[in-house]
Length: 329
Image (tube, rainbow, N blue to C red; front, top):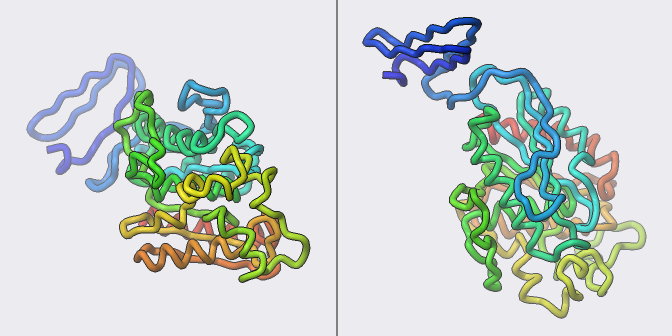
């Protein structure tokens, strides 16, 4: 009956709800508000825009916090974009990316900007476990905040793009390719899906083992490139050892190695003159996803470096438009 009559949301002190043959009657003592939604609209809440900061999504580390930016909600659940900061796996903060957060909220999206354990605190796969826990927490609490649990996207930058990509390609996995267990069974939301429906990855690594060779082919860096094989590299620090000494573990951390049919659509953005993460990483990932039949788009920004204004100026608007297309289609 409710699907034919429409869904009604009511809130009040002393509210009485009566379902009768003719429809749904909401009566209350005091002030009440209601919203009628179309039959295909998921239920939501009616609430003003608000910023909820430092919400814990797990309890193992002070880093396991997120900021939830909510637009005005008028009874229809809103799509969510999970924002993952970069910082060479060792730094950065959930409040580093403000331009995309502000634009997305202004366009009616909710945004969850997450922190996660960094390499100085915990080695791989701790950050991946954290990202999975954050998605589960958000989906488990979607009704409370008026989020549409079927429309979650992830947008990551550099190391955050790697993490968001790896999150997406291993969403249905219990273990990584080397047998590493992804979940220890202590997450109270462990039965909740970690799937996302769209992925944006800006200048992100996709295979640590091919990064240094890509400085030569396909190249692109006009200056001195950052090396990733040495013992003190960001990737080696994340893995807990020089990456060439733990090859199987490093392969298990490569989003490109999990390309398979059924993954969500991907948008990859990379500066063609990046000297931190070679553009070959996005080219390699694009080729792997396309070969598996995944919907993937790559935007190379000519003259763009790593996390520079040219990339932001050129690609912020198109990336938001792409998210709109994927999560509001």
